[in-house]
Figure (spheres, one colour):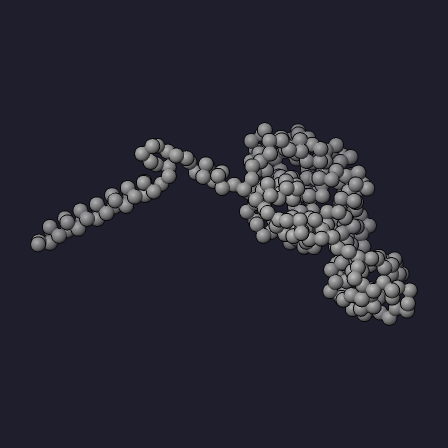
Length: 319
């Protein structure tokens, strides 16, 4: 067999193999068949979605205009993010059951719409985190802003970690914003983007509706993230999460002790009340040191786990 003939035969084999390969790809692609295209990529993706967006939606009693394509797509984006962050979203749903009762009560006392409780999920996912900018706690409060509002923030006590007091801070901020805008949606957006930033864009764009404003990406996504958490936490199964009632984290049970003196050792303090340092700090994350100097004899209310021995109250404390 001559070399030119071998080259021709080899080229023919390669060509035939390539044709067979391309044909197999076409046959295997569901977009092509003897009967015509069966479905496109969007159909494939949609069939795997664990949810369907509601036809109508409100947030804090105000309409979410899902008939606008950009509003619909923005909410869809945040629901996709929530639905496919399985472990994180499950933890958020579980924690909501523990902390919402406390937050709901404070919102109600301040005449704040209940829907604004979902802001905590968007802010911190119910964790005492610190942002790169220094925002701290469930409600992500900056040090200077917290101090301006009268919160105690120092090395020993940081009330940004105090669930009740930080929630009251948020209520005060939201009420003041609502008085300016007449919209709870804009009030919530201002909590994320700041009043100055929101008002500047309202002026530039001559708009007073959150859903009609072009904002920086974080604030533009913020309300949709909050609304997405409202949908998922309110009905997890509708969005692909099967979580039984007994899997939700229960509310923390505790009793309270008032302290107006120095506490030199919180480990001894915890032991006196039949608990341990770890649980004491878990219930009181605003106590930042193993001691409390309290030179001004301020009154502090400290939570003690319910299993603690209450019968010691009134006896001489040694801490």
